[in-house]
Length: 388
Image 1: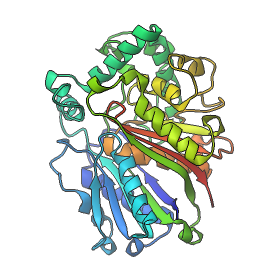
Image 2: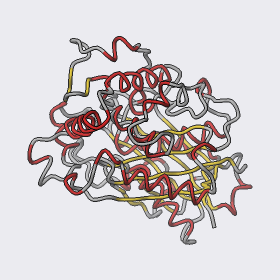
Image 3: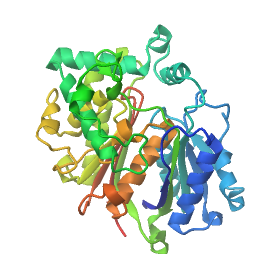
């Protein structure tokens, strides 16, 4: 048995003062059902990816999806949380239900409302997705965590501040073409590589341009059992998928090794019967630019310590051999936590179906998607291809 993506929705990410969590969820769910061309009564189950953790008061939000259509009433609905990989976790849970024969059609929504609280509170909430006893309790935020990773990488392999700036430049240039992106502005290398009043150091050596954005947003997918795909206008299949979780405490692992992502990529590619060089493009989790640099190495594009090579030689550029984050990534698109993993799969499916508009690549055949929770703790890799 297999699962296919047969419809989707993606709202614009950003600061939405006029939208609450419920309206974000409802809008994405309605649009995805319409895009799939299916009635809400046919949905056998609902999965919602959402971190929350204090962003909004709504702790119990799975049934908010039912507000999208009265015919969703009585469908089982579950909220799924796995830090910044909550969206992929919801998607994989829905796929498990379909592949177990418990559902034929599933609705997956990823959503987050982050901007209703102060920046300091956002930092605190996100920090609690670390190993609190050793990390958040010591005042270590996620910028601080990834700054430690970057510092360790620099100690082992030399100062790569300019490499991180080039990654930010690439993703912001790509984001200009993404109508869903929070920031559609080409910032340029000099700006990203220079500490200034507008680009301060957030946690050395990471600058503001090395950090993803605080965002509101939602995305949604309609999934169907492969036996049902003739009922739909399009179908994107999962050639393979893998989830790998690592220890939560950073003290128990080498964060620069990115062992969890590396293992997830290896498992997914082996199951798909292909190598990273067979991929047409990839969407990877660039919560910080150092995470994208380490992803190049975890994917197998470059040996440890040599990820800079593929940004320098153009491999990962929009017109390169393996474009990475053509969407602009989390860096430009934004990072509404629960929506991110769903968003990445939506954008990959759009590319494979030739429905990506100004983002469209020429004739992509195979996509890689990597969504990560925490500091390489919860790792999800999907290999996607169009099957109809």
